[in-house]
Length: 295
Ligand SMILES: *[C@@H]1O[C@H](CO)[C@@H](O)[C@H](O)[C@H]1NC(C)=O
Ligand SMILES: *[C@@H]1O[C@H](CO)[C@@H](O)[C@H](O)[C@H]1NC(C)=O
Ligand SMILES: *[C@@H]1O[C@H](CO)[C@@H](O)[C@H](O)[C@H]1NC(C)=O
Ligand SMILES: *[C@@H]1O[C@H](CO)[C@@H](O)[C@H](O)[C@H]1NC(C)=O
Image 1: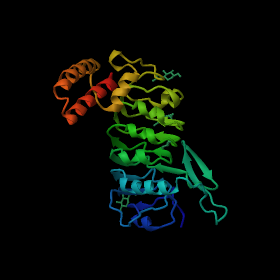
Image 2: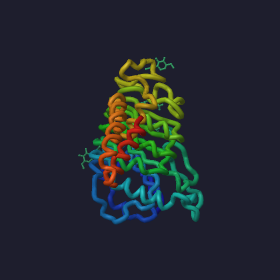
Image 3: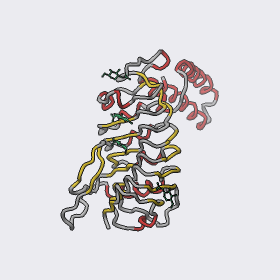
Image 4: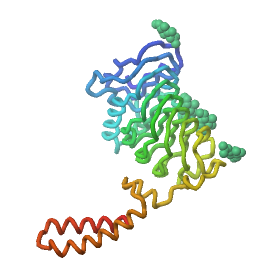
């Protein structure tokens, strides 16, 4: 079996773990049923869902953390197929599947194997967005909207260069929108509305194309395209602050300048004393160099 679509029924039960072992399953659609309970399991199969590309569990009553273990396998699958572009069901004919793309139900005649989407929207999932998501490079669409997810939006999502839609709306996400997300060059639809996000909205690239409904109902967000202007302490991130953030040093600019001065002074004065000790001299050179980099 390659495609299992039991969407829009009244199936009441827990997640059907036994589907894990179907080696050819590529599309799993459980959308709009009454599935409930947690999917936080240790998979019973060595390679669960080994060919899965479309996972649509939307509009059910699933709870607990997001099923990270299944994402792990999706990652393995993406790596294996990353340079092949074939179509599912090439032997069969007349296959079609309804997939939700950017909010529209679209009937796909044949599904490219590179086409990968995860839709876990409209459930009761909680906890944070797993870091692993940032590694699912061939992901085209990700919808975690209408859940109870907490924690920050990870800057590692910037690696999702094929992602065309990202919907994290109606959750309990906090913190700022990472400036790095402007590196998601394929992004066409972004929805971060109805969360608890704060700070300036990143600008540049794709972010100049989203309108203010992408950000509505977040008390703390400011800047274009919202009408709320950022205050002094929340001005849009300048290249300097971005650099510090990426390096993760978090140093105050003044301290770095002072450090640069001291680095040279210590380097020069001690360097003469211990010139014979090679290791120590190297150490001093390193300090001097890194201070130069900061400056
Ligand atoms: C699902 O079935 C259980 C009993 O098996 C019942 O208690 C529960 O209300 C049902 N849920 C829905 C949404 O129908
Ligand atoms: C995400 O899922 C919600 C609920 O299922 C839907 O209304 C919304 O249109 C989806 N967003 C995108 C971008 O597809
Ligand atoms: C974002 O989602 C909200 C509802 O959760 C909706 O009203 C709004 O139109 C959506 N915006 C975009 C850009 O999809
Ligand atoms: C969103 O933009 C519209 C005009 O495009 C404006 O009327 C509205 O006030 C804006 N909303 C917010 C929350 O900035």
